[in-house]
Amino acid sequence: MNTKILTKILVLGAIAASFLLVACSDKSNSGSTPGGGPASAANPASAPASGSRSPGGPVSVTTAVAKKRDFDVLIEAIGTVTPVASVEVKPQTNSVLTRVHVKEGQFVSAGQLLFTLDPRPDEANVAKVRAQMAKDEAVLADAQRQLARSRDLMAKSFISQGALDSTQAQVDAQMANLVADRAALDAAQLALSYNSVRASGAGRLGAVNVFPGTAVQANQTALVTITQLDPVNISFNLPQRNLDAVLEGLKSGGVTVSAKLADVKGDIKGRLQFVDNAVDAATGTIKVKARFDNRDSKLWPGAFVKTTLLSHTLKDAVVIPTTAIIQSTRGSIVYVADNGKAVLRPVKLVASQGEDSAVTGVSAGDKIVLEGRQNLRPDTPVSERTPGPGGAASSARASATPASAAP
Image 1: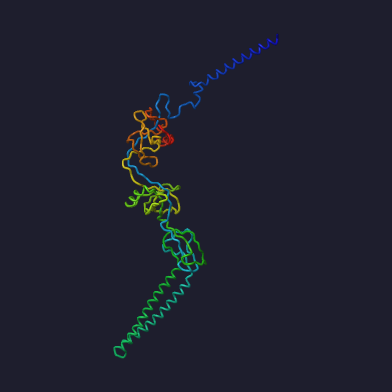
Image 2: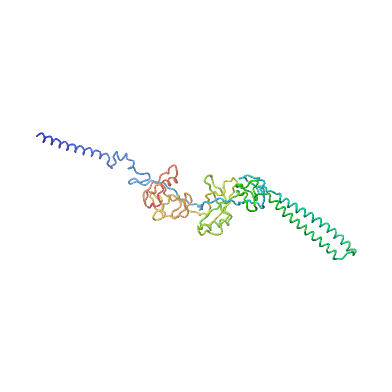
């Protein structure tokens, strides 16, 4: 009997515990229902995102006004600084280096003495030629005296005309010998001058490859390299499609070219100087050069620089921020805020430069949607708001949509 009573008590206790668990579960669920109670209010994930449309309300957006103005189309390329002239100095005679007058990296002027070679062999040649020349001058003087006496004797009919002509021929031969001596002296003096190696032009010296006592060979031994640094050229390649614009600019006196160094503030201005006479068939580009003043030596040969060349100017183009353009499956589009609604406008990109683009398909004065356009569809109600501290451009960049976004 006691066993039956104990069993009933245990069953009743289990039933009571089950009812108690069900009641606690109902109370917990009632605090997290999606009806907007305290739990949903505390959950930040359930709050509407910035720029999105609350149920029944307009989408908050920022806009930029399309403007009509002249739009410069610029061509950008990476160029290389190249010297206008770079000369490798070599001796013109076989000799031994006796003195170095300059230091590596030194700036030199045209005609400045760089090296001295051993001049003694050439000085001896000059002395030898001078001696021969003095000998021939003495022989010529004697021949001229003989000619004068022969003329006197001929006047007195003491000698024949043949004898006079023979004496005249001796004088002429000695005069020719003297002319040859003068030419030989000039050649010997020229060879002597080769022992003084001078700068052919102004520039900066590179590494000095020789030292006193070095034996050098004519036109073979490299002594030093002189590189002209002011002015300098910047060489870069442009696409073949820009050839007409570049040639037109070259004919008009050379268009302005800007160079930008990564570690230097501001642009350096130069002018287009050269366009190659053939297009590279492998790359489809044309090689051009621009010349720049380089008094402060900011441009160094071999350095890479970013170059910008003015191709042409679009007159009265409609310009909008580039970030407002959406690349969709329908092509390029923008949204225009018109009478409180978003209006989809297909546009055609004419040219793009930096943060601005010249387009067709919108008119000057249209309010182009920047921030918030990712939440728009055609005829969506919109409300314009003031951009943040970064301005409209920074707001547009912050809300930029992927290229695959579609309305």
